[in-house]
Structure formats: structure tokens, C-alpha cells
Image (cartoon, rainbow, N blue to C red):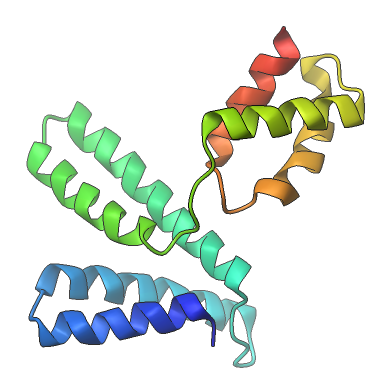
Length: 151
């Protein structure tokens, strides 16, 4: 069992003992998503740490999208709830890279691939994503690559 999964289960028990119903609900939702992914993977195989990070990133992305939608709809109360859930989810994700750090990696990937135009974006992303998977938001990386190739 991965460290992250053990940590989530441990914190679920602590939250239950502390009667923190919000955290219990959020952690159960995360565990449910992990369980569903294990079922999809098949034959009782456990998920790798990388697969767990992917699931957590997906959950975080869903929360960010919900926050944006609720804020546009004037539902600050629901946006706040989603923000709290996002905070819990992000606590299990690896530390995210800063924009400067990503930009340096983008520039390296562009020089390695010899990319010169936006049509070369796929080459750059192919080199770049294995280095930053789980450590940066894909939309941010994509935006930085586009900016660097457009210059």
C-alpha cells in the first residue's frame, strides 16, 4: 500500500475520532475515487503512487472548476465548501512547481526538441510532461509552452 493511501486512511480515522464530519466526508469521497480506479485497473491490483497522484489531481481540478462556476453563479457558500475540500486534497499532492521553475524546464525542452513554432507543441510536451507529471498543473504548463513557442 502506498504512503499516500496509508496517510489518507490514517487521517480518516483521526477525523472520525475528532467527529470532523466535513473532513470525514471529503476523505471518504477521495477513497471512493481511489477504490473505483482500483476496480477499473482490475484483479485486485493496488494503484501506484503515480496513479494515486493522478486521481488526486483530477479531484483537485474538479474542485477548481466547481469553485469557478460557483463564483460566477454568485454562490460564495458553495465555493467556500469546495475551497475547503480542495485544501484537503492538495495536502496529499506533491509540492507544486513554481511558474519560474516550469518556465526553465519549458525552455530546456524547447532547446532539446529544436521546436520553433506552436506546431511543435506536442514534441515539447512529450519531453516535458514526464519530468513534471504530478508536480504542476497541465493547463499552466500548456500555457507556458504556447507563450514560449509564440515568441
